[in-house]
Length: 341
Image 1 (cartoon, rainbow, N blue to C red):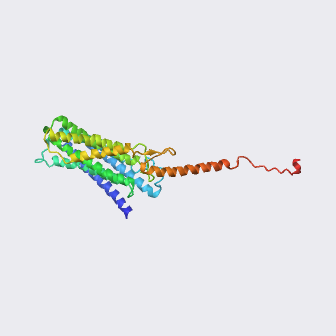
Image 2 (image 1 turned 60 degrees about the vertical axis):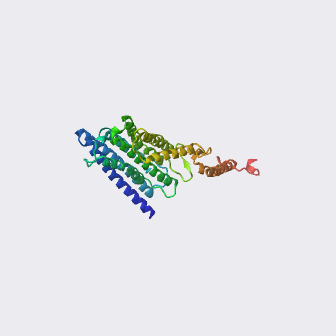
């Protein structure tokens, strides 16, 4: 039952992900193309590139997950095309490279001209359209992974899905200030737009960590953790800037601010704690015997296993050294043989 549920979850995530991607692209293209020349229809071509990349990534993921049952084992060496997460981060990178120019163009040229009272496609429709982005991240994530319950990989996925989607919603909420450009100086508007667009790229680090880190059951980890890059990026490019900008909008321009101000402050505290733990006592340790890196909680048990394996190898070497050489034929000489006299 659990296996069938996981299969249906991946199928539903793939279908909804593609449908929402097409829907969001169509709405944003309408905002961009409306009232412009035919050259603006070039956005449709970039939509096709993004859609093709997502479909290819999901097909590769489906092929890998199916091949596990047919030909491959989970312990077999995983090549680039055999990894179900091989193209997840690439799919999001292509999507972000497409979305960011669209968002920048809309909010620098058209967002302030939208009127909710006279337009069906007004500011609220645009905000709801951008709110599809966090949902797309979740569907891309759920469509690719096959994590088992109560594993470190599953725990990371649950944590990732909540943190990234909340930060993406944070960017959409910040963009709301750009619908009224005259309320704040243009420099503040540009800062809001820049940091919001940077936020759309940062999930690439989180998705690459899922591909790069194999989450071994014995606690083995990669010596280079992209999780720290992800935490530092969201700390210094999202939560710290958004906290400062919201405080400026509050105290200098007396604008209403979101309760996400408290979220930014809390995320900064949690991020600093995680970085301190990683760089301090909780930093992964390297085994001098096998040169692999392990989490601190698993390092002691690994040393025992590694020591036992090393002892076994030494015993085997001693046995080989003590055994007689079999390089040549054995000749037996009998001293009593009269032919040798």
